[in-house]
Amino acid sequence: MATKIMGQRPTTHLRQAEGLNAAQLRRVLQFIASRAEVAQDLLLHTGTDLDDMLRAQAAAIALLTAIGAMADEHSDTQIAGGADRWNFGPDFADLGKEVRHG
Figure 1: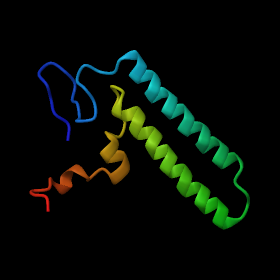
Figure 2: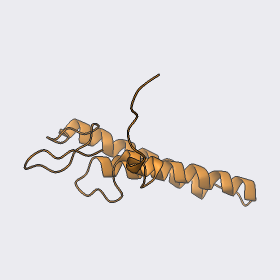
Figure 3: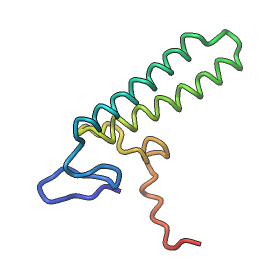
Figure 4: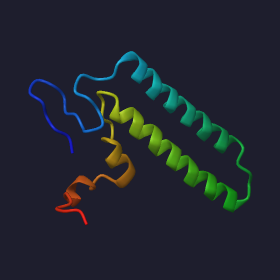
């Protein structure tokens, strides 16, 4: 869940309030680009068999979810929200917090 620090934009436990340094930003962008390349190759080389197309679609959705979550988590835009929202759905935070472990 996002927390608000006085005078700063909301942050999550995955992102520092001061933002990313150049090396961290470069790493995020490299991972986004590499995942996008894999998704492109996957979709360009999928055959016409229905099972192959369905597997390619599922894989592409997983890759695009990862790309969206990475970009959203480390930008000021928050298009869909943080990684939890991208991966687990818009109502994930509404499910509440765990009260105990074990």
